[in-house]
Length: 173
Image (cartoon, rainbow, N blue to C red; front, side, top):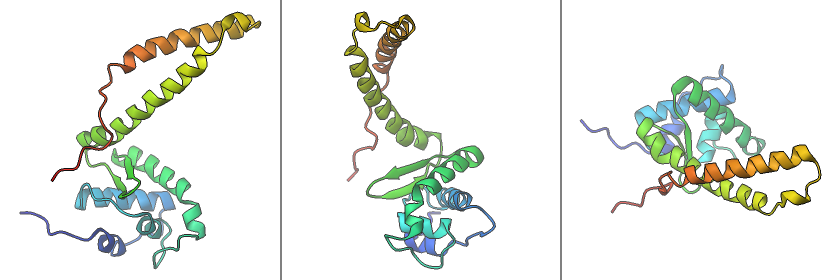
């Protein structure tokens, strides 16, 4: 039997907030419950802030809670991983949600982090390749740079084996 479609905003507004929990724990609990009840559904930041801070109504764009969002979402992500074996997946347009299972986590978070790893490796490789070890007089530092260059070469060949998949699958029609 298929579940009836529930509006994510209405679901968030009707969610019962446990005020005994910390802000991050409230948000983690909500995202976990939403992943169970409405898998793959994104929620906008104002709805998540209302739940995290136990607010009666949606917050305004310039409120103090909006400025504290980074701390709260990080705390929620830590709790989701530790207690629920989920991660937070965010999309700039859609919002935030918890992953539903290992396949979802692989399709979203792993792909996203792999793309970042490849990009970061390229930046570090560029910095290292610009260094001429003959111009470094400190023997310990010279050895450190040589070892870093070797490690970056080995990492680079391993990164070529990572599947170069998009972080987000193409839309289906």
